[in-house]
Amino acid sequence: MLHWKSDIDATRGTAFIALQGLPAASPAAHIAGLMSSCREFARDAEIFQQNETVSNIYAVVSGAVRFTRLLRDGRRQIGGFYLPGDLFGLESEERHSFSAESIVNSKIGITKRSTFVQAAMQSHTLAHQVWMTTASHLHRAQGHMSVLGRGTAQERIATFLLDMDARLNSLGSIDLPMPRRDIADYLGLTIETVSRVLRSLERARIISIPDARRITLLKRQVLCEMEDF
Amino acid sequence: MLHWKSDIDATRGTAFIALQGLPAASPAAHIAGLMSSCREFARDAEIFQQNETVSNIYAVVSGAVRFTRLLRDGRRQIGGFYLPGDLFGLESEERHSFSAESIVNSKIGITKRSTFVQAAMQSHTLAHQVWMTTASHLHRAQGHMSVLGRGTAQERIATFLLDMDARLNSLGSIDLPMPRRDIADYLGLTIETVSRVLRSLERARIISIPDARRITLLKRQVLCEMEDF
DNA sequence: CGATTAATTGACAAAACTCAATACGAGTGG
DNA sequence: CCACTCGTATTGAGTTTTGTCAATTAATCG
Image (cartoon, rainbow over all chains, first blue to last red; front, side):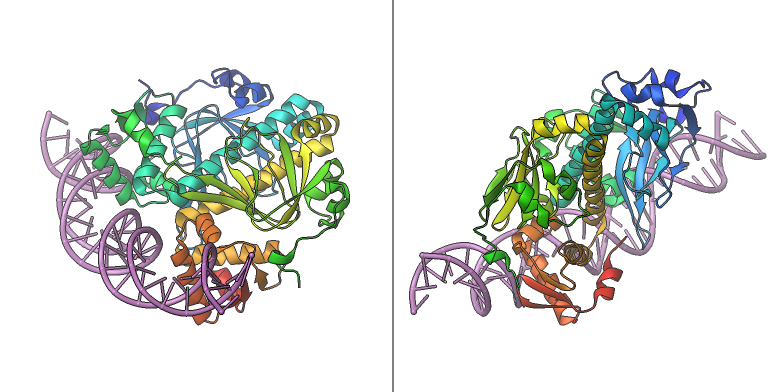
């Protein structure tokens, strides 16, 4: 079993080759041919920063990325997580409004934005996929808005666990790449509340937490019923 | 002064003509030539419904639209408001995940999705604008996520007022098209909290509320400092 | 003008936050 | 292999904010 903390892999190569491992259905796979380079980012390394000029498009090959915004008083909101197969950094604005940071050691495919735009001018298919990618990010953001605006702590955690399970293909045994602090900042809660809700779900035998980073879904159905949409 | 409650206008015509009144800089203006028809929707009328098949693209000519999602237990989350010049309904999914409802009597330009997709295949400029529109919706959604996840009631209200003032070009004298219930469901608060925060801002002489639907910004600077990003 | 809906206000309850203490776990050096 | 340390997570006690419920006032519509 591959663990986040040990996923440093000496293998290198072009992003194209690296991206072959991506799920075939993901937009990233179609766009893979354009990825000109592949870099490794260490745990907590910055991929791009809030306010920085948008100049590249990225694809997660392995690892995990958090998309964060720092507020004036030091509070932090995480806009989302990017997992293997996900594209990110594809913004229409001149500057990034969020930072992207590698949560664990990650391999990230990179293409120049200009190359991308050029290619999209040539290919309707690619242009359509660019739009689809942005639209799916929008769809995800809208779903998250509902969770943040109208969910109790328990509903937020339930939604988060089900989402992670689905996206990591973990079949009920989730190996979380991120610490509690990230989960809290993503769900608009404190780490204490995250911890308490997880423990209460464990006591109710709905999940089990053999290790802080590993969560097993014992009664998925109950979690689904907690989701509010 | 035009009021939301009295903006019923007997004038009809093609959307193209109607859309001439839009701000020239808005994407809607560029896309205006495609709008094949223009319909009026009464207060609270449904433009499209959650789960309905996506079949049209819409542009607000006059009035205001709320973008809402109904949750299982009857709670409601408003994803955003569309104001004159805004495009909406441009989704990549097969079905709408939110409903769109006219808040006041509104004129809405409508184009078939298929017509739109065809035209975007012919024109890179149009395709680019479609992407830009979705990207700007994403940008707005991400901003709203920060507000919902990390803002106090006061910060949420301050952000809302400044946003509405800017988008309605009201220069500090905002004529809100929506009732408190909509503001509450947009900000993830209750109507009572919205009411209390507004009154406390009024008592602090930061705003004045001559009428529930009209809010004047007395000290914009103070509101800006309340925003968290 | 009366009926109906929308908004405000108050008293109280509940959910989540804060602060502080404790426990756990991975990595380090003896 | 065992302490030791440091960062992360958990747990507890008490506070704060916001939500709930109920009553009142204000606005809108016929």
